[in-house]
Every structure is written in structure tokens, then in C-alpha cells.
Image 1 (tube, rainbow, N blue to C red):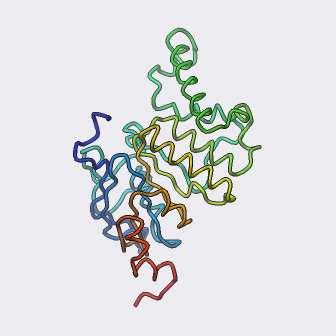
Image 2 (image 1 turned 90 degrees about the vertical axis):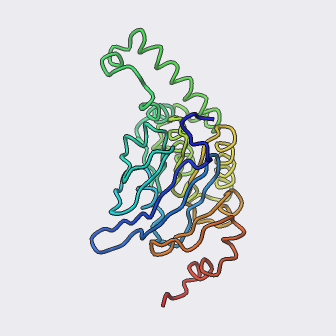
Image 3 (image 1 turned 60 degrees about the vertical axis):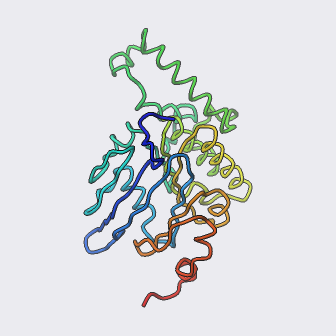
Length: 263
């Protein structure tokens, strides 16, 4: 177990987070926690504030109210570089890869925060810098083997089908060796076979890498099958929080997904 992780088993907590853009409230007084080692799903209808919450957690958005406690340290807002250096990695709803670079090179970019030698050493590619890069490349190759993408390791990712690009993006996030992995709709746009593969990889990442995962996903079958706990947002508010079985039977959740009007 990472010694930085708190002994109470809670890796991250969001406390009374509120976020607004102009007069539009994206998140309103939301609190929940993510336990060390679990798969935590964040679900809700379109516009519920799910992606905004992930953006708050890794510092892309700064909330007007509330705080975040991560590994026992509480702050009013996270900053992206701080999140990355402290072990939070992220994939995005819209794939954010370097399309002209190969699969291997894209995954290597995930190692940047772990590289110790400065830019001068790296430019010279000599001595310690070369040895360091070889170690990082070895880990990247391990990720490629783990995700079963050896056949495309040298292929520019812009030439890959959508499902494979999603897998490469997961690989880049894993290359950072995160303690907390944020997945924003990792299975969106995939066919049934691709979803099954991605589900398997998410479960394997959680088990074999001991990585805590928070994911947004619209496929309720997937959420209920792989999640330990589920928090439900609707119109920026938390309406349910519990095990998949508890959430599945919650009338407020059923109403939100059926589009029942809010009085």
C-alpha cells in the first residue's frame, strides 16, 4: 500500500463542492468519497455535472465553494500539475491523443511527470538521461503488452479505429502509474465486443495495478457489473449514493433516467 494513502481507507473526498459558470450551476453542494482500491462510478443523465466533477477533482475547474481532501491533504482547489504529480491521471470524453505520433510514443508521454532528468540531459540523450528513458520505455512496453496492443505499437494513432484509440488513451494514463484513475466515458462509441474488452481492462487495472478508479459511464449494465459503489448526479445535485443494487432501486434515480419532470 502506498504510504501516502490515509489509513482510514478513503483516498479522496469532495466536500460540499459547488461550481457555476455565470448564472448556470453545474454542481451544487455535492459531497462524496472514493475509497482506496475501489471502482467508483459517477452516473446521471446528460448535463448532470459528471464531467465537471472530474474536472474539479483533477484541477481543470476551480469550484466557488467546497474543498477536496486527497491522501489526507485538504485544499479548496486542485491544480492540474499538482494532481498529476500526486498520482491522479485522466482520460477524456473526447479522445486527446497526438494523432501523428505512434502508439508507443503516445504512451511514453504519460511518463513525463516521472522523468527526473532535466531538459538539457534529455536533449543530449546521454548517460543518465538515456538510462532513464530506457527504463521508462520498458514500462511503456509493459503497458502495451497488458493492453494487448503490440501489433499497433508503431502505428500513428490517427490511423487507428476509435476503439483502439480509446485503448491507447487508457495506456497513456496508466503510464503515469496513477493511484487514482479518472475515466470519462471510456466505452462511449464502442461496439459490444470493444466494450467487453474495455470492461476487462478496467477490472484488470483495478486488480493488477491496485489502481483506484472513478469512472463516468452511460451504459448502466456496465456500471452495475463492474462498480463497487455508485454516486448519481442530476442537474448538478447528488440524488443517490450507494451500492449498485441500492442505486438501481432508488426511485429518484429511476425518475431522473426516465425524464420525470422536476416540480
